[in-house]
Image (tube, rainbow, N blue to C red; front, top):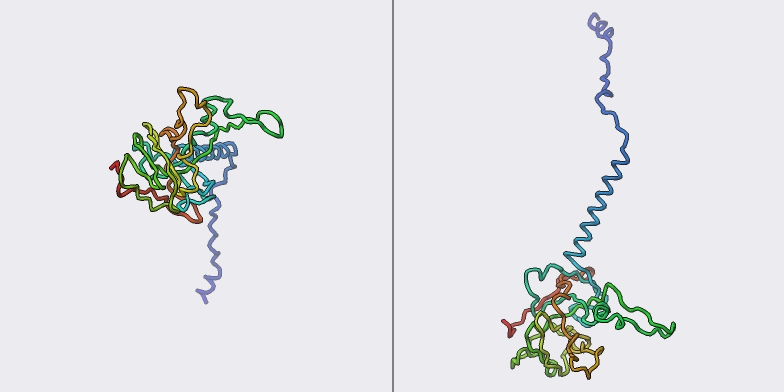
Length: 252
């Protein structure tokens, strides 16, 4: 009983007060918080701008000229840096500025970018800073002679036409010969019978009677007008864009 009474008389051990160990919460410095978020947003915006303006480019296919590889309404991502250390090659699918874009014509003569509006009865500007982006395949390289006979492509008077298994259908027609200038490329669509391409980009704005008239003035795509090399088609039908390499390429 002595032991029991002793235990009953003992006072309970005091609870540990750990409130002093807890750090007091400091008030939020809203000015500092806003500045830090602003910096993050600016950096994110800068990176997004860098990626879209320097590294990649996105284009929407607006026609069936590149079928079956690319269909109308497809969205394709291009690599802007693809030709930084190399030249475009035959078979590459590229994004480029249409040789007769409003931007190109505006630089030649602003009057070429105006037209009569039948409703308003006056001239309406047609020039846009963001010119149409075309997507085609490179067929002719700088300095080459390109001729199309019965729909088949012959380079530099070769007796064997290019092998083009990517074509949607059997091509038709006779075109050329065309002589591709230096630093320029002859481009056509894979849907050869339904593509408005270099075969039809002749000069229809100058006076044909002028001694300096050049019917091929707008036929070719200059290297400086190439925006990007097509890389990836986005979902839902995501796949890499095929850049064909020809078994019987006369330039190799």
